Amino acid sequence: MASRGSEFETSPAEGTEEDRLVRYGTSMFGGRPTFTLVRRETDGGGEWTLHELLPREQAEARRDRLERDGRSLSITSVEDLVADIAGDDLLSKLDGWTWDEWAGAKVARLDPTRVRALQDVVREAIEGTPGDSSEVLTGGAGFVFLPETAGVRLAVAFRGVKPIQRIDRMRSLARGVARMSDEECYYWYAKCRSPSSPNGEKALRVLLTDHIE
Image (cartoon, rainbow, N blue to C red; front, side, top):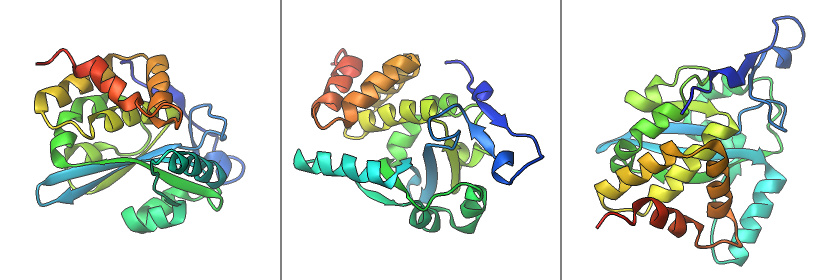
């Protein structure tokens, strides 16, 4: 997969504080980041948590649709998410955006075994992301903001690998997601999160791992 470094732009130093923010691509939300990946260190190794950042009204509507179908979605305010996972350091990097009406919708949290299985696909997806992404890959606690394309790719990988128990199947799914085009990732992300497609994640796993006996 090609580097996404060209997606990111830094506005000229002149103008308001918001004008000087890094732009995470040409999203409908004015170039703000739409996902965040956080690493925590546990006794067994690192774990990753992926959140999608979106307007609270949209997050709650998605949660309500899923609950009507017997599924769940954990959402929290961006302020609480910041305080819980990264403290003042992340809060300072959010400065300039307006987050009062935004929420973090949890995509998935992966344990150390699944972190290791997805290491390569995550490294490739976040290549060129603004800021220091080394800590979320190599150890310790860290976080990185992601543009929509990278976040969607990781969401597909995270949701797909979550219930898999065998390492060979985890690695097969990771390789399959890494080979997908952006358009394919968007398709599978829509399938995996849609209340009208409850078997989307299962179909993804069948596609990418069913050849393994």
